[in-house]
Image (cartoon, rainbow, N blue to C red; front, side, top):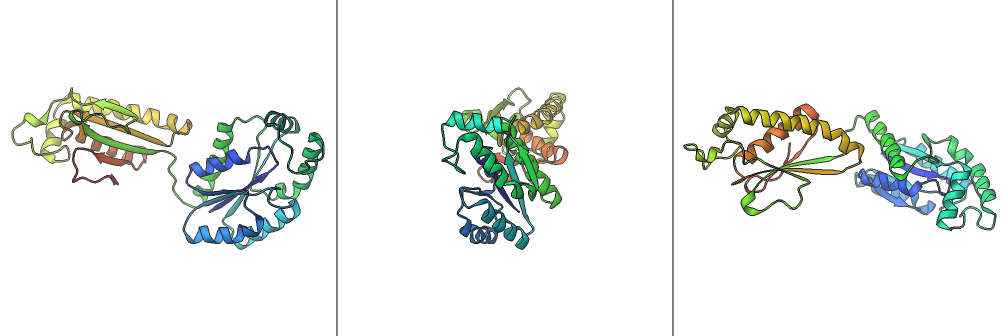
Length: 291
């Protein structure tokens, strides 16, 4: 799938393009129009999703409309987002950045805005989505663009991950993990290390799992952690967080922390519908997994 960002000067096209880049699209800004078809073909061959911003910096409105029509007719996977804003908002933005209007730099600003709006009307009418950014801050604009991107994925039956969840275990003996967003101490739970025959096992082994699940405080801890993660997950997505690493620590990083990491991974996968990355720092034979 490819997304074309275009619209009026000062309407927030760069912000929209950055939002798509955050979603994993291969993005190019202000691409010269003669290069557009070749660029699109090359990115498609690489299997990448793409987004490109083209506007009156790249070509005249007439040439822009013609080339985009040709591109979309040859590949129906392209979607066009047209950004605009009210005259007063555009005038305020240009006054703030102290830049000349690129469409008609020799005209006064109100007239340049009116001229560009008129010339871009045909392209606006062909857009899949028209966004008026007058009352939007950059985060709200990015949210709107992301929502459009997700709707296209749903139509194409594709999956997308807004937020990557990493769950990890570690030993306090070797220090806190530097990349953890949050650390939860599991050392208050019963320690299987001192149970006969369990010292050499890990929190993935059946005897250790059975031992821990036989204690009510372990079950209560898991329940409360699951309730907490299920509550904060949509809040973090709403705040546009991209990565969240939750680390569980215990004395040796082999039993309690490993068990709770695996338990939370199963909850994320089966209940939340999220595929987590699972890391056990102190178990080098267990590679990072996404299951």
